[in-house]
Image (cartoon, rainbow over all chains, first blue to last red; front, side, top):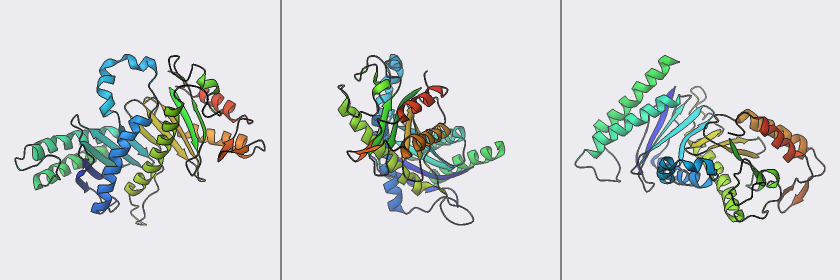
Length: 158
Length: 169
């Protein structure tokens, strides 16, 4: 299992962070990354529109439907060996992680950990401006650590 | 549970669409699943919304394919990107299963999120399509699409899908 890319997209669809993890990640320049970030952002919104109207039986769960309308978008995409997983936070931020031949659980864990790293090293940074690109060595290192740990674990399990 | 089923031609023309397991309260009437397919735009208040949805579904499948194409991993030996055919797209309320044939036809099924893979079912339906539509002399060209109302395709596809585990809840 290899993690390929991480993109962080703010609530208006702007890319605020992107990185690649492996030599098998396809090379992307800044423009490509920006475009991928905003394309995914819109597809995420379209996905909730395009999905069929829930049958009346499933509308009987108010706790879910209350929170769903805004956060009901793409969660995972499986395309042969490639897996993409998206974590949308309640504030509208999206963490998008891609991996090849990966297990969903380790990707989910990695995303949660990256979210924690973001909270620690971006949000708690007094010089960080909201919705702006994230920079910082500690953040970079934190992200790498979160991902490397999961990669090893996945490899061991396989 | 299977919600709906679409077939698109390469250029995005919807050749076939039907919904299954529609609940009685839905605008389309409770018989949509039985006759809602071929006659696109049958009566029912939500036709416009359905047409819109039909376009959204194709647009999404099309753009996701592009996106996936950019993100697919490199092969270590050839330094070429590995081909990654779009399989499933999961949201919290539904899962979209897609299968694209070499000729560019897209077979798309929406199910609830509990169904993990439909790939072989989609391929089986493609075989039904080849047998009953591609090889059929009864198919007529109509409005830029095909009129397949004279073929057995819809019946066979429905029979097949009803046997799929999880067709109904």
